[in-house]
Image (cartoon, rainbow, N blue to C red; front, side, top):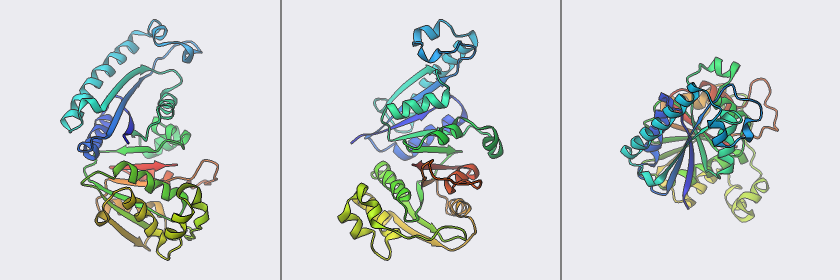
Length: 310
C-alpha cells in the first residue's frame, strides 16, 4: 500500500532541510509519495475570505501577495528538481500553491486531515525555543491543534538513518512504534533503538494487555504484552511483523538523569540519532505547567527530527 506524506514548504532554508530529509529516508523507497503544499498569506482581505473561490481571491489580493505567490510557484519547481536529484522521481510528487483562507496552520491541518495522509512534515521556522513557547509559530500551532495525523517536526539538517524510540508500555508509545513500522519498514539503511529511561519522576511501567485488544486483538496482546520483557518485546514484534529486519533493532535501558525528556534528547545527541519517534497523549489529559514529555522534547531539541503520534 502506498504511503503518502504531506510536506509543508515555504521556500526557506527550513524547507530545503525538509526536502533533504525526505531524500535521506525515501530516496530508494518507491511506494512512498509526497504532496508539497505552500500556503501564501493574503493580508487586508475582508472577513469571509474562506468562502471565496481561488479566482475571486486572485482578483482581490495586493501586489505584494501576487509577488509572494509567484515566488512560491518558482520555489516549488526548484523543490521538484531537488527531490529528483535526491532520488525521488517526479511521478511520486504532487505540488500545490494556494492562498491562505483560514490561516496557514489551519489550512495545512485541513489538508492533512482531508487528504488522508500518513504523516505531515513541517520544518521549524527558526524561532528560539522561548519565542516559540511565548508567541507561537505555525509549527507550534499545528502541534497544539492536531492529534490525528502524525506530525514530523524537523530542526536542522539530518544525515543519520538511526531512529530512537522511547517506550514506556503505554498505548501511545506502541502506536508510535506502529507508525514507524509502517513508514520505514523497507528503508534499507534504517536502524531502530527502543529506549526506556527509568529517570526520577517517570511513571512506573505497568502493562495491561486488555487495554490494547481493540488495536491488536486479544490473542496478540496476551502473547506479546504479558511477558516480563514486554516493554521491549512488544514494540520489537510490531516492527518485525511489518517486515523490518530484527538484526537492525536494538534495546537500551538507562537509569540516568532526572527528566525523561532531557534524557531522551541527551541520548539522541550522544549516539547520533537523526530521528526520535514519540507517542503523545491526547489533549484531554492534563499535563500541568511542566507540559508532557513530548512537548518538552520539541521545545529543547535541535538538529533532530521528532515524529509525534497522537
